[in-house]
Length: 209
Ligand SMILES: C[S@@+](CC[C@H](N)C(=O)[O-])C[C@H]1O[C@@H](n2cnc3c(N)ncnc32)[C@H](O)[C@@H]1O
Picture 1 (cartoon, rainbow, N blue to C red):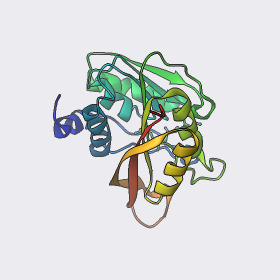
Picture 2: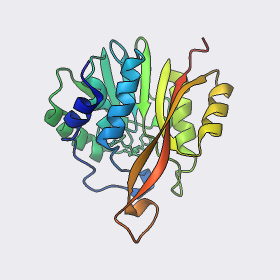
Picture 3: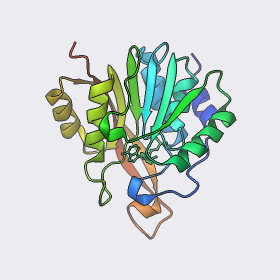
């Protein structure tokens, strides 16, 4: 297994959104955070040999982090076809040994039936935009349906919600870590180029075991 630092370096070539849509909360997950999430998942045995599904894959950042770590297969799914084109280009840049299957679909309506032990990785919309409220809840619902284990990035004050949601769906939050995320200005404010927000990453075991 390469180091987390090496994985972040490899992800440094992943290009951002060409024309980001605010309504879909399109911003690239920073390479350091993607590497931290996938490295942690790999250490837990949740990547190598597993089917990995990236819900709301956008630029493909999390899917590409996973494909660099020896999964059995990786699917990156997004509602919007434009970032999927960027994700395909990013796949060429990263030059992983295996392919990612890029799928256009709605992550909130259980669009997939993956084979074998499945790990969902996702940086879902926080549901902050009008018309997209509670998107993170719907993404978690899909993870509950298709995954054995999920890793998801949420607002920093989401622990109570994620733990309660998981418990309702027969899941358990087994790990959590705090991180920081630089959001582009159009999402939260107007007078600075970026804003750093606190986020939390949760590992949920959905097997009920
Ligand atoms: C915060 S961005 C994360 C992007 C990605 N992880 C990355 O690093 O580039 C959220 C992503 O979810 C996608 N999205 C929003 N609603 C969706 C839905 N209902 N189904 C699938 N994808 C959706 C957006 O298009 C966007 O790419």
